[in-house]
Image (tube, rainbow, N blue to C red; front, side):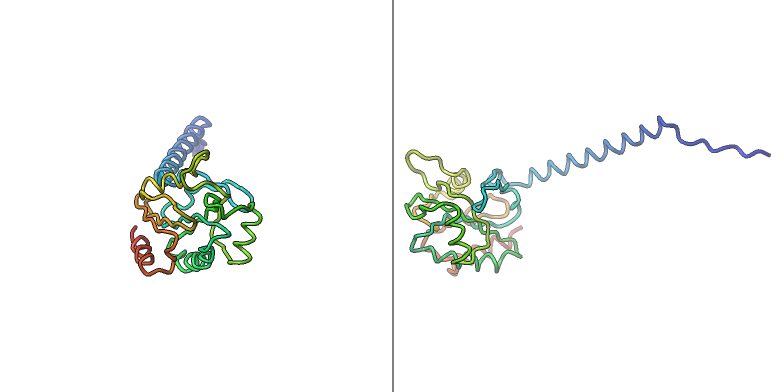
Length: 201
């Protein structure tokens, strides 16, 4: 008795199956992209130029983390706070803290360019947390304020009155706590608020 030959799947059936699998994959990809976009708080939905080379950095990379946003300056009485900020970044980064530094000459104490600022931060104070290019952080005539600082001021009700003003931002981006320049990152009250935000999911 001659065995019945097994027919190979038709080319049409193969193509239809392949297209169906591809479509399913695209649906999953689109769903994941939409979820990622949703996960980024509106507060972070922007790019900022990195200090060292002005490479645009998407702040959404920090979604889901607690942020400490600080406007900095090289020639200020509070400039030594760089050390405390770096120590804080190192101590809490595994728990989800990211310190973001934004140099500004709004108070006439950051006249230098990016190279000078980066050298001071890295060589004098050992700063390793992300630093961004100079921008305006406080309302003033004739300049546009960095959009991130506009959003921070709207949520906290406080604009920087001097260098090293600090904003603690919750993981969701909904809560922003403002601290004056004189508040050192080692201050117990500051650390209590930081701990509270780090424990929140």
